[in-house]
Amino acid sequence: MYVISSGNSQDGPEPYGPADGIPAFEARLTRHRRSAQVARNHLREFLQRVPGGRALAGDGQLVLGELVANAVVHARVSPGREIAIRFEVVCDHLRIEVHDASSEKPAIRRTADPEDMSGRGLYLVEALSLEWGYGPRPEGIGKIVWALVSPKGGAE
Image (cartoon, rainbow, N blue to C red; front, side):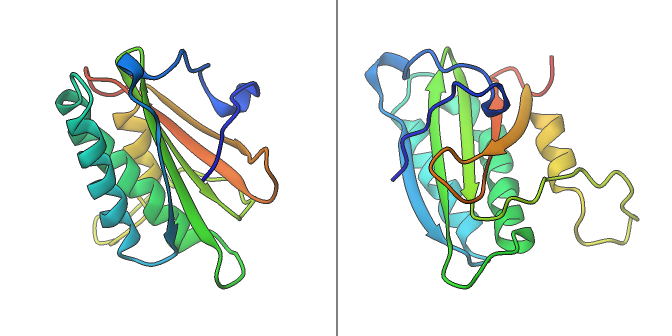
């Protein structure tokens, strides 16, 4: 699993430590279309152990699912590369991280036709998160895409 340092401003807000001593959750997933559901299941189970976790579950699962789906579909990496997920609750906010081996910058596609079946993932992440961003993985190849989810909903 990964130990994440957040000293880089691209990594997002400085974590203040896990809520009430609850450790962060970390896992590796295969790059498969079902990985988004597996990640959401992990998050749901994690948040059941966190006081106030229920208020973070809805938006958190949507954000995590979109970030994992983007890593599966859009990360141009060699076969066999995995995706890592990490989440923790800090100051009543859920910090979600998805690590992949692609260094390609995530970009919001603002123009999706109503008939398009995809192209809205990062737009949803932006709408449901207080903030989100990306940065290089400190341990090597690829990037971390992160989002901070509030119990009060998206950008305040």
